[in-house]
Image: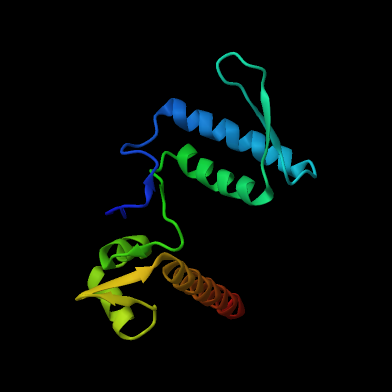
Length: 154
């Protein structure tokens, strides 16, 4: 997958076994502290032998951290894409896991909003993720409907 200039690649390599174990441990600690009724866990960070400093995670930051750590613990490479980022058609196709020609068809049908920069189409990341969320919801509903139909036939 090509990476937008402003996207922050987590790394150019897959996480090591130690990084995976560390991510999983930290994910577990944050998740456990959140299930104890506290939606804002406090972590302590120490720098150069100084006293540990408390860092309270907001619920949003906790959720983002959990998601990030979950991927790292699985050994997956991670790239952060700002929601306002303008993506190329290839980047958008890679995110949706579809071919570039299929994505172009979706754009031409106005299924996903886009803009033209010269001769090139650009898709705002937020619009792409809105489409992806709606697509995934439609797929989930279709699978549920099929499961109900299958159960009725038994």
